[in-house]
Image 1 (cartoon, rainbow over the protein chains, first blue to last red):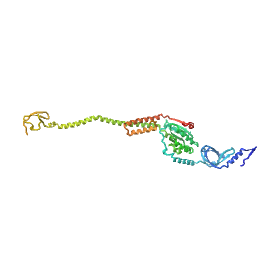
Image 2 (image 1 turned 180 degrees about the horizontal axis):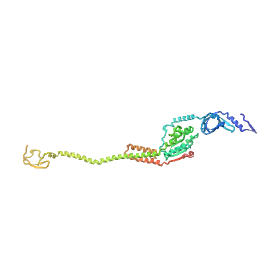
Image 3 (image 1 turned 135 degrees about the vertical axis):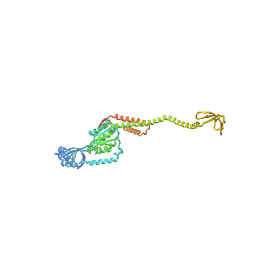
Image 4 (image 1 turned 60 degrees about the horizontal axis):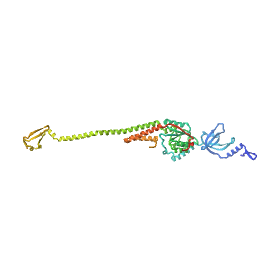
Length: 384
Length: 70
């Protein structure tokens, strides 16, 4: 197209309109292509010819105004809204009336959940192959953390739920709250930096990631590779309470423990103080009881020993006495006295016991010992 | 044992002592020694519970940028 200039001396001057037309004509020669970005500032009104929005770069937030014929936009039958990630098919143009560069959108496709899911799935396989999600890597949570780090968005709910549940179970808990961006393209870097800052704080024994439910896209930062790696590399155990039960962002897999909600996370990181104290009392009672039992057992054994000790001399004496009696009995059985009792008598002379008639002669005096008493007698005669 | 035990270390040792006593294997002298240690651990645990003071603090979002690295 011919752009006309007027001459002012040797200077060629273009009118604004002509200049815009010229640039517009030049831009229109650029190819039609697909551009990826996030929809923001979407404006659509029934009376308007076009629908307008700004396409924002997913990485650095650079902006590109887009206009799209309303009929084309409506024909897509898409529930496009701010925050949606899309591919726009279009060509650059200049809105000549205002000298504004923009993209003329001819078609639009939502950056499918399918594409994002596939990307996450690939990352999941890579990280799993590295062993980042392995059960052996999981660390046990401390029974009684000195200090709890809570990483959360600046939404009130997740933080309130967690803090309330912690305080109810364990009033003495100390929580260090770190709020950070949890949504959008800058969230991953912010989460990583905050997680690192939190875990460097003194006495932090566990970190909790708490993020309420949200759309699939809202939770994408928690499946970002940087975040997942930071969770796995965190020097203290991490509890992930991100999204709802059905969402499984990758950080859930890298965390040491997964909690379905911030409240559930609280139940995991602090013990029930009442129960903890009851448990200690139970242990102490058992300690005392078991020790007493052992002491008691020792005392009984000792008492039994003592009894045996005191009884021993008497027993010994008794045994000796019994032995003595037996001997005495035997002695008695052997004594001539028993024989005398049966009617025998012992006859003695001065020479001793008379065992033969020949040992005496008539007229000799003998002494006769009887069972009871003795008598003197003279031998009248002897018989052979 | 010169290093301060954590709550769970103390609690675990107390548990071990109780089961040792429960088993009845310990002799008298050992039992008394275990009991004394057990009481000490019990006091340590309860002390830790008593000493803890609930606190909710905020980590300044800008803190990591401003604070010099130790």
